[in-house]
Length: 176
Image 1 (cartoon, rainbow, N blue to C red):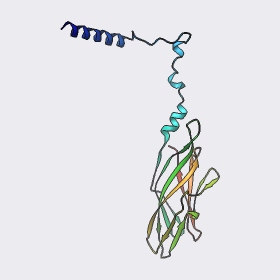
Image 2: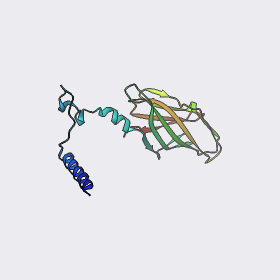
Image 3: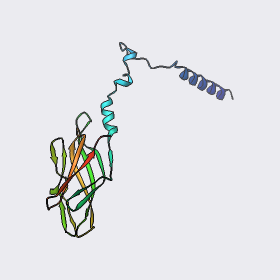
Image 4: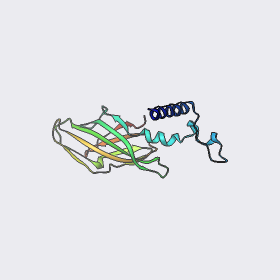
């Protein structure tokens, strides 16, 4: 029994000393211990903010009418695609899902050529082609689109059109 009580006493003393702050790491010679760790506000908050900012989810619900086709934003997601050397995002991937509904008795085609993302004075084409054929009244189709955009993008509008030349703008708020 004496060994156990001795171990228990040593463990208790160690815990008390640790709690009291008696055991500290000694800095290397010539190093100021106050400068060893950066202040909390000196940490690179820009990088951590950039990392935690994504993904940004954009809720659906907004609708626009281009000729006789109604476009409804189902939802969108803005996420990191490619990072710069410093770890900050350089290129973002914007995935947009839109439902198109034909409101008349006319057949309509919607292709990637009829869709553009307008942002910062630039036009971005979808990364993958798609071809939607809407037949007669009330036919509906979902379109998933992917755009690669610069990380500096804050707002954008999706220009949605049909092969008959009608188009409309759907605003996408990209910042939180």
